Image (cartoon, rainbow, N blue to C red; front, side, top):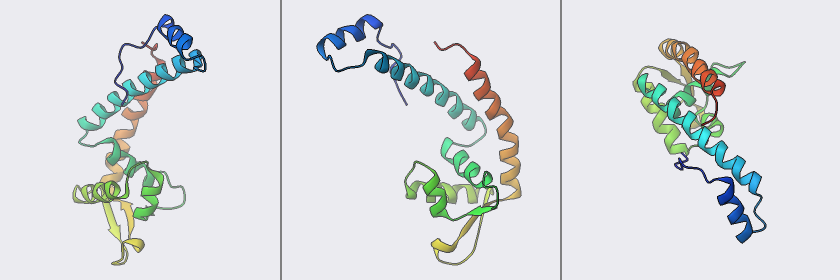
Length: 146
């Protein structure tokens, strides 16, 4: 999250540029706006996921399995490789989603051979969640930046 609500004005940034001439004023201004906007979107998404008893991480685990064109399951290590979270977080998230009935696990005793898949309930939850998810993003992107 980016917690700065009151972004620096152009005058403030020019003053910094006077002190730090190597600073690219326009690049910093653009980056700060982008960070603020992304933070606002993340807040809306987090609220959306919470209203559906999910978190961003849980949603992402479901979606990375669902988006595979030729497979219906992934190894836990493949899920971790597709996300920017630690392997222990992925392991715990998979465990939580399995307990909730959204994921199933098949395969050997060794974690390296276990396949994680969406259960029918997991597919239903994701199918119900995605239209609102896409609508939220579309509405957000259609709004003027604050």
